[in-house]
Amino acid sequence: MGSSGSALKVCSDHRGGINWLSLSPDGQHLLTGSEDGTARLWSTADSQCHGHFQGHESYITFCHLENEVAFTCSADHTIRKWDVMTGQCLAIYRGHTSIVNRILVAKDYLFSGSYDRTARCWSVDKEKQIQEFRGHRNCVLTLAHYSSRDVHDESEEEQEKLSRDFLVTGSTDCTVKVWWVSSGRCYQTLLGHTGAVLCLILDAPNRELFSGSTDYTIRTWNIVTGEQLKVFKEHQGSVICLE
Image (tube, rainbow, N blue to C red; front, side, top):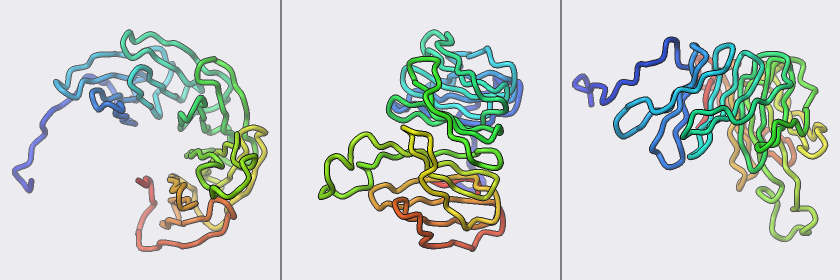
């Protein structure tokens, strides 16, 4: 586009900075979470605001949009679930004692990470906490999820492949931890980063996890054994996102 490029659409109804964007799976809507404590739903076709989600008592840190429901988390220590069509708050998830930084929806689970040094697992359909993951020495900044059936070979016994879900957390304590969702116990701790772990992404078919950090590196891990495989060192600043 060069110097001739210009914005195609501008959505400017928020009264504060925008901390996160989430696109619906069908691509028809965009959800924005803002410093003004609200989330807004926009049509990608006409850039008009079609929903205004109000109720949080502090700024929104992260948001997640599906076709029919939306999720937001906030510095008010809560997570909220919203009806996309009506803007009605369907559920409030309470339990964290500090800022909730990140949420992740996987299967019937809702996972959250917080400055209270914990991650938590909730039932998506109920305002009920299922599990708490406690062990990090500082705040939990990023989350990933996988199932044992995603990483195990077909030759392994069926019993080993059923109902084993894992949560992966990255923290400012410089560690990555892998947890059994069912018990809340730490399965393994991945050591190597010398700065806060800001982002994670999984390549489950290849059994690999990538982590990015304020130590300027990206590291690759074998998600089954916990072995560190590679270190990428070319950045001259913090790695804040992986895709």
